[in-house]
Length: 81
Image (cartoon, rainbow, N blue to C red; front, side, top):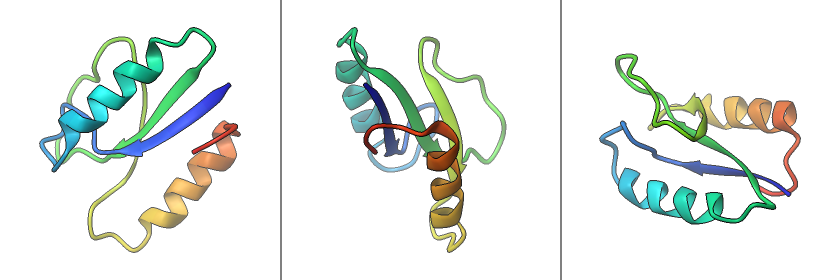
């Protein structure tokens, strides 16, 4: 099953990024799930956490974020978001 999780995600310092990491860790434990994290954009490029497929496709308070998330969903074709 392919799942896309929309959340703040480290190394972002946005609210609840640690919560997003904990959810992603639990989903990754299931061998039948392929996880992609749709995360908030970073102000400066930083390396992603190892072992996670992360697509930084949205920003806080940006009206165009919904369009970018929908574009990412169409590209990934997940079973659930």
